[in-house]
Length: 597
Image 1 (cartoon, rainbow, N blue to C red):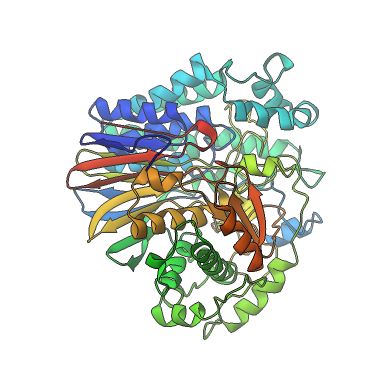
Image 2 (cartoon, one colour):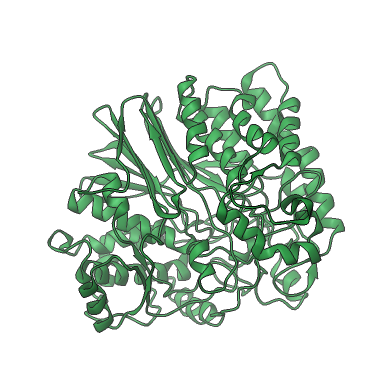
């Protein structure tokens, strides 16, 4: 089968990510003797520099790791929590019914930095200075400006000039939007990272990394964030100016944590995902539903496959709205949601035509939760996103609808020792919040994923994690670690990933062949980002699907929107089996790249 790129094959190591410079930086670390954890950290920090419209230093990252010496998969939660002052009443008192998707009110504790350094300290082998060196180099000496970064800056340039002057100072050098391909520098950010390296003092590698963490969360970085939020009223998507609620105390009291993944066995595979503080279990629910269908007999680009998968997605995402939230705050009936008995009943709801309803399951002891959730979320089916708001299916798709939003990145790394990393960094987008001038970066706006209604599992509360869409994946095969994979895409991350997984498992396609297949998704359920819009019955498909498939999907009642070819999804994947390492990356947007040998 023709593929846009070769599936990379080797035995030494592989890095795949959503930008070629980041993949190259990670591979360079492997070449220097670093392991997968060292390489992933270097890759992640470079992505902050070269894809600043998709992630930043004050963003967040969930990470799935497989450490070969421990022989276990673990989750590192780099999702920060809501500030102590972030109560529902605090927002209601300001006349808000949704948390704005831009500005300072949506800031939670930045989680990415501590997650990366926790992984480096506990599983890596290299010094912080070594893994930060590529990012500092590109920030200080410059990197070629991506066309989409230039477009993102242009989209919000008027807002920068009028309302966010600190962002204008960074992103509009000499008052102009940087041209695509031009050399771009963020010297202030380079100085921040160089200072963190200088402050990383101690007698051991681990203590030096801990010293840098302290400076970020209790030292000069936290002090700058605290001062900026306290003393600045910033225009946001609500059309009004607000101060931030995030404080230095919030920063000092938080750290990244470890937890076991949720898993589901599908054929001879075990899929590993984050807990229900993210949307990861949605993937597991989908395959629990789909295992009752004869997918082997279906054409992977045919109407039966797409209809069946989409209808199961609708059911799983309806349960996300009713039941998912931070399990430190709410009881989430995960065992029931992933049980055969529950999914055997839910599967009966998949009919021959498209459902236009949001239909969460009713779980004994939780009946009222579904009743509260559906009217609550449906009441906010908005449409006006505003400049810089939220996170889209993908930024370039939302631009076609006149929206202006951020997006996400992804990284997969496998080394010669069998260590694996799958990470999905996001947040702190250049268009989401103004630059903090002393630091050279903006805050995350992930709090927009909370609801300001009481009694929902994802209702806002101080110290609570927002129900993030960020959702890396790992899969075991025959009980052995096999594959790391993922994609940017907000609510679509756990739509494109199951499609990739199912096509790979059922139809024998290699990683690149699978990634190159036409993709599809739905916006049937309320979006996770401001303004929380939904499009019941929607089905977006790439135009390179067979015309007969599209026609039949229309006949079955789907509200089909045909998108341009090669426009949906940004999947990356890497696998290892019998000593052979494989890697692949999407050709879509012509940015992602897999490197290995």
